[in-house]
Length: 148
Image 1 (cartoon, rainbow, N blue to C red):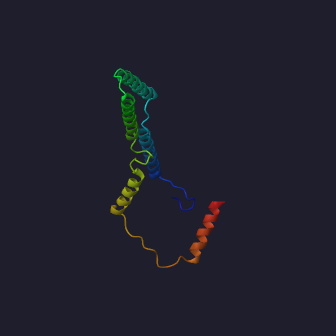
Image 2: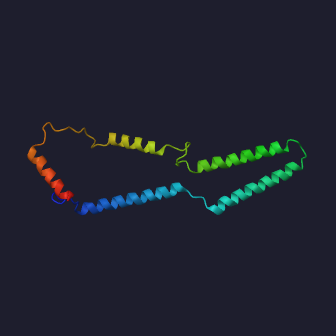
Image 3: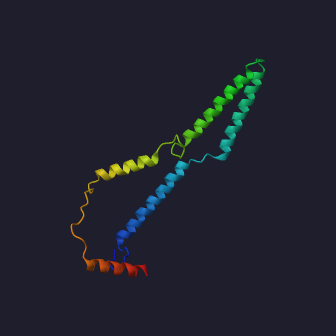
């Protein structure tokens, strides 16, 4: 970093920018994979198949001529619709629902643990002396120049 201009320079800056761009593209790729979009024709085909099965159940149960036919049909439809909802909830375990995994909490815990075991993690000590007036004046002058 240049002391006068406050700009970052050097070949390491290009490496840093390249690393940041790789991390950014990896994050977008993870986000895309977690989206897991289900193709709409597939979804509608499964719903159509489910409704056709309900029609077959209805015809089959009506041929039994029983008073329990509406109850049995209701139970069958309740179970299959419930299974479909459970499958939809399990399809994206990393979302924002109440039953999803707490990924953000896990990431913060992992980062905290990684910082604790990192070899360069040393306690920071504060200087014993106050900065002198000349240093403070030069720093404020430099900052006011950059602000203009």
